[in-house]
Image (cartoon, rainbow, N blue to C red; front, side, top):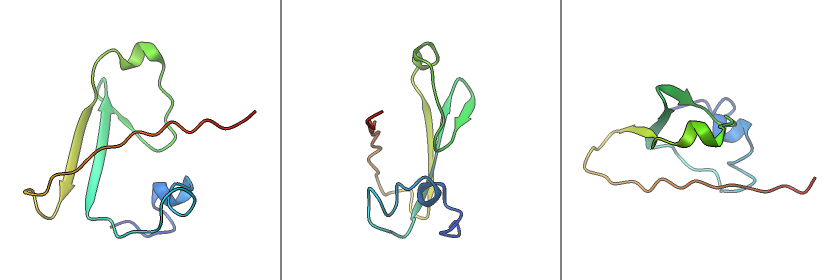
Length: 76
């Protein structure tokens, strides 16, 4: 598990601003065209023609997860 101060979701203000703090039980990794995406990665529409490859590692492989994508629009 990440140190909470270094967790990309904490650094990116997802945890705390959007969702309450939680204990991580799985580690997702997302790849587009063999390039790993990280918090804050930008993608062009042309890069998203193929579907992403998602790897989720955790303690219990019998557990199912829901992957949620959120686009937060901020006023300019």
